[in-house]
Length: 212
Image 1 (cartoon, rainbow, N blue to C red):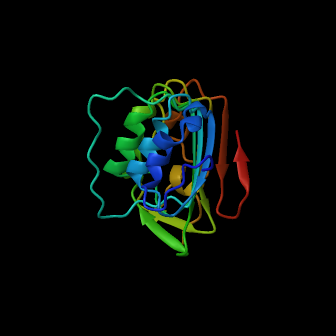
Image 2: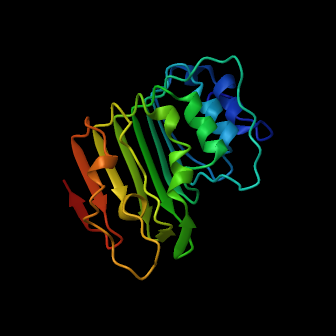
Image 3: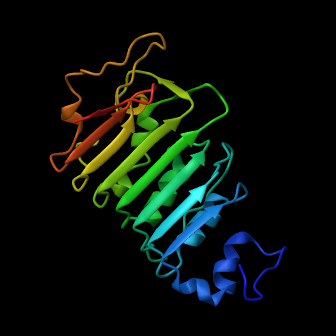
């Protein structure tokens, strides 16, 4: 944020408009806990931006997010959400994904101070549809935390372009009791994968990968 563009009272996203040099960015990394979902969408509007890495991104549970109207979709091809405490689910995440329908690669790494979290896989499934036609590479990971959910399953069978999937077992091999072992051999696992898939890596909670 150099070149005389810094203003402590200016909202973060407006730096993109003030710093003309940033209009030619292709790759951008941001580490800012104050970054809001609206800020993230504003960053995606950078005309030539293709890759965006965001660390420590948080989505408040009570946030209200108004969808953008009459604006062309962003050209972003790669998005990495790292060290977030928020799962990729809910209407706010769906709004963000709606704005980046050309996305090819999505990395979402959840890190939380709580040892365990509860979630419903269907809530994640409802946020991902805007990316079904374009996504080639998807990574959904848990770091230093456990996720417990009901026995619903994530289904990627209609992600027509997906070629690589790296995912924590808690997302893909859900179990309804915390004490049970992972159901690594679920008969329906491959029915929930698209024909286009070339690489599948399921990461266990012991940090051991199962490649297929």
